[in-house]
Length: 211
Image 1 (cartoon, helix red, strand yellow):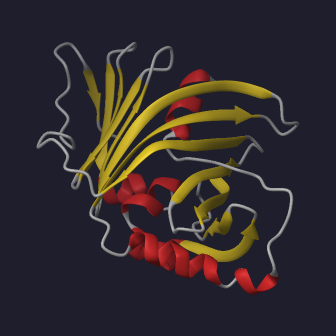
Image 2 (cartoon, rainbow, N blue to C red):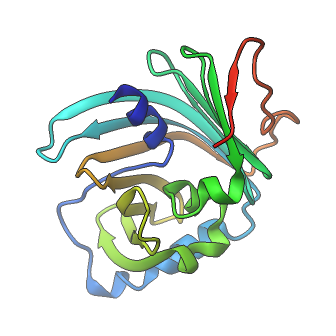
């Protein structure tokens, strides 16, 4: 359960609201996402996340940080005790488990296709990969995305955006009814990132798998 959670949470989650804004605000959800993505080249944030089962019972909690370079570049790091690195360099996506001294690598298009990560790293494919609905929430707007791929490992993805077109968080439901929520902090839009931010070299002694 732990390792499955750590891998899945990279494909991410957030916020359930209790009240609705006026219906006139609903149509603004997609426009808010478009404005958020306009001119976006890099993005970074810290996050906290929670995994709950179908009854709402908390299974695990974790913290970490991520950065994005559009398109198809990602660095996602989780802190101990669920330490893990996920790095997409534009060509390949690596998932590294330091405790097991294992790394899995796949072509980025195969690895990201029809996953929550695709929303962040391949925004130009949003309508191709998801059926898109809109909702209004007190903080701003929410996009509700349902994957078109029949073999996707999640059934629902929510994207919350604030009234100033900022990304507030993500939430997704997996095929087992478990919900992952990711809350963002210290977000930076178009930060200057280190040259090696999206590169990964397996540490010595790491077993590398290529499914």
